[in-house]
Image (cartoon, rainbow, N blue to C red; front, side, top):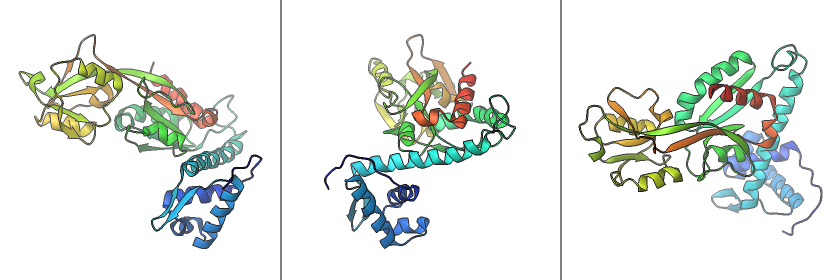
Length: 303
């Protein structure tokens, strides 16, 4: 298809169709949540492609997969649909007598949060407790996302989350399309079986998310740290393995919250590596009442 320049009007239902096809992996499967038929969904997608002047899905026996342009369009569609939901929630909440500001508005509605495991377990609970106490109409949901590849920032950029708790640093900066800030800088420590006489002699237990470039550079300069010989699914599994005597690990503070008595934590000294943890959101959602309220509580927790 040849690209065309000019205004393009897409109805919300067309945006929902794009999202459904991407999420379900095909026109027939997308027809079910849309309450439509395969032929109607296929016709709708062809119409959207004509309007945009670009192929959005690769068709085949496997179903339909977004092209690079399609993936971008679906991400925008999710974000636009979310803003429409926010518009309804915020306009209905104006002047109803509760909430933030001068005491005239309700801050409420769904609030989708993506977080890596240790942040979901140890950072967010007190934050969400304060948030929902101040704004009972907010309905937060937290989805645990592995902080590898696009990670939590990718969930926000693709419109699947309103805010992500992310690792932020030179190796994983805030993506250009998002905004955010650092909330805390946590140190790494040596974790080993309690009472072990020579913990640095043990094999290294590691997991995929423990991979900031700064930390790896620090590790490479430590001649006592071997290559990982044991791999675990997440930091919780690492703690379990270390406690069972499989080896030692180098882990950030959040992951060590509530560590069992079977493990011992040893400080790595003044030159220890650190990990920056922060939040990311989209510029448009950063201005919404629920996200602003969550960010206030996140920042209050760092004081």
